Image (cartoon, rainbow, N blue to C red; front, side, top):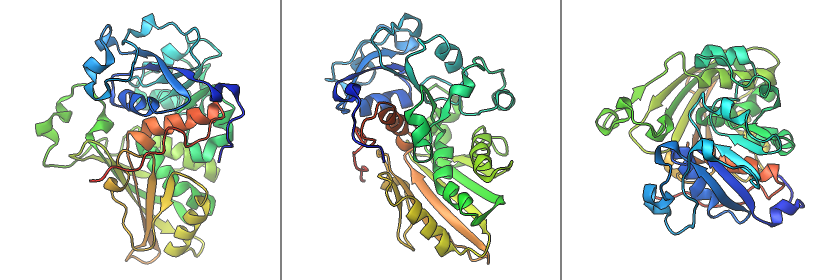
Length: 356
């Protein structure tokens, strides 16, 4: 855990800029930051709503004395300590490379997640627009990269699916308790995971009363998952990953099917996770037999995981739930901001899950 702050910035108000404040991750940043004791939102951009008051776009956040929305090119960064980039994939790289070099940046898009720029081009369909910055970017999976995050200027927040998958699997990979060549990941997410842009596939009539897979065998989060597992394993790895869109606003459930290795049992896997996350404020391993559900984490920064023995000998099943907009995006981004400014890591993220 990060220590209590000794940084003078932490005892005052960090001046925060949010690029893309009208998307789902952007508005979630605002919702969380208005209650953060060390943060003050000083700048917000939303090109489609430039010139509008924030509470005119999001009435539920009225009464918070927020700045008027402006266009990205109008942003003045003098006096801003921290920028959150909540822009669509493919737009952040060009913007970040033009920001002041001393400005700390947490990017919520995929633009800096993949370390190899050629891999990025393969999966995202265009060249990397800021290759000189890529080596500087630190992968923002908080529970595994605290030291590097705290010392970095540019953080690439993980995708929502990789956050759940990696927190579930990385300790088991490190313990050599699962076969990394036989991992099947079945993932399900609420519709907010598809973003706020108007798309036919996100219309109510297209989503309600049904479930559909997407990105089958070619979803862009697969190479991100493989990158991080491969780094820990010391070699390349390929996972079987299939996401599904669920008829709900938010929430994510990941079920992974793994082959046990080196004599490990499902009970051993559970014990490894319990020990690895014993001191983590946001990661919970449920008792044997308990089943995680998305309603257990809704609106919170928590991660909840259960471990089950499969009926097939030598295999185990892991179930992990997160809120895709909080721990899967904006909450984890704020967790990383806290580390970057030596603020107690849980600050601004203490809210409990909503129920029902």
